[in-house]
Length: 169
Image (cartoon, rainbow, N blue to C red; front, side, top):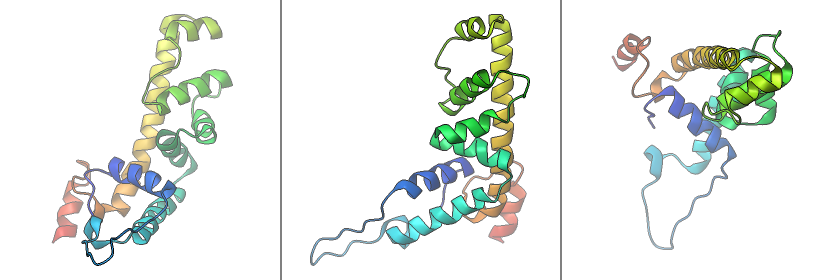
């Protein structure tokens, strides 16, 4: 079973973890198993294995990846803790939530600035900084996972293309 990128593989693992494995068949008919001959239970086990690898990452990388793929409030709050401590907690949580929701803030930068008593320009700079910090943490986690899961990835990042050639040989 191959995935195009590490992001696709991790996203699949989070989705599969929530799925209930079910195998259906009609009486007297045989259908080839999907996903390279793996049963639903085996797919679930593979997803759990990938999530276990994510669980062994440093806390910062775990928080960023979990917030991005689950949108869970606990994961978002953990990701918000990665942002500069001098910022108000509510601002860090709002920016982390916006980053986890596809980089879409719930409110405009102008309203955020008014709420926290700074200019729209400062709100924009803080939003850019939050995206940068959380993106770097998530990418650092992806880099480690990509090395661990190279056999499942069709298009590794430019950093690991040479490793993919070694595995194929």
